[in-house]
Image 1: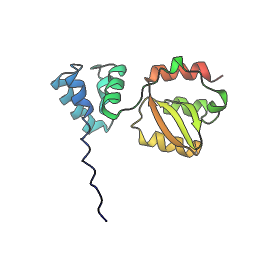
Image 2 (image 1 turned 30 degrees about the horizontal axis):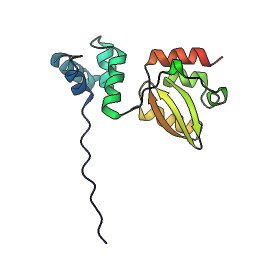
Image 3 (image 1 turned 90 degrees about the vertical axis):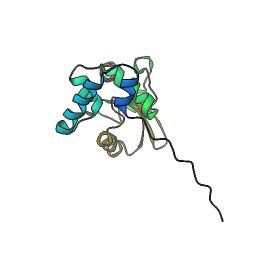
Image 4 (image 1 turned 180 degrees about the vertical axis):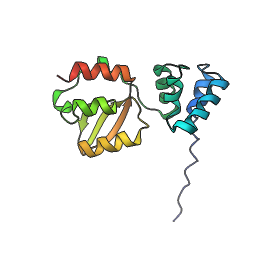
Length: 150
């Protein structure tokens, strides 16, 4: 029996390269951020924001391009109260997440950083669900938490 080989998937473009191509940062800013990343061990997007090189929305757009994370305008979304009970307000604030919908054992969640494996793993343990991440900015998520959790 013969198996077809799947063509190699193209490598994902690095976040910094996407931001460079979009003229949102300079090479010098990226070099400085990468140097700081080695010391701080953080996400490159967070470092670029922290040092004022870009805004959070710029990183979000780059993550949408890089990883194909779907963006959701959380302020336009009506969330069922029963879904909110899956994640406490305190955990939602701490992890910068808000649950959206549950279908079977899959929970759709809006996250400020869908690449945060620790947060996704913690959400899986808290909810006993597989996590399907969407992306929004921290400010959008914080506003949704304030609006939805009473």
